[in-house]
Amino acid sequence: MNRFLVSGFVVSIVLANLGAQAAARDSEDGKVAVEHVLHVQQDAWNRHDLDAFMAGYWNSPELTFFSGASERHGWQETMDRYKATYASPGHEMGKLEFAGLKIVMLSSDSAFVRGEWHLTMPDGKTPHGLFTLVFRKFPDGWKIVHDHTSAAE
Image 1 (cartoon, rainbow, N blue to C red):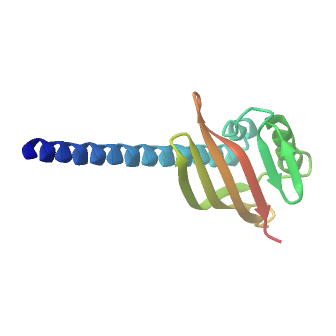
Image 2 (image 1 turned 120 degrees about the horizontal axis):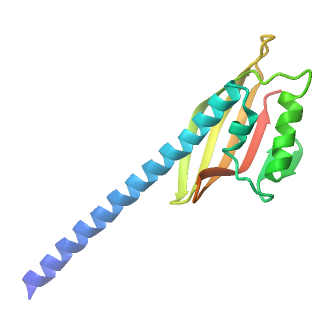
């Protein structure tokens, strides 16, 4: 009888360890996928392709975007903000770089991201700031569902 108890205990430990390894692998896969979305966005921005940049956002009226003292709701309102700020006459998109990314998996289908953004403008100015993002995994991939971006004074 003791041999069965010991065997059962060993099997439980092995199964728990395999489950923990699978969870760690899933977490790492999620982090890689989220970081990939940000790299794709950065590349799209640097090609001045705002449509491709916005593909990283959840195309929903429930998307939220906070910047400064402004709160925007929805993909279209967020797109309109980017167009007005960076792609309208007299405005430039510059070269974007994300840095200091810290990705925390909240679950198998949600992640929290902190980081820095830096723009290098054609006139030599270098606006920059911080951001926090919430990502969710959808059938078509990882998307930003909330963006809170601040600019340095």
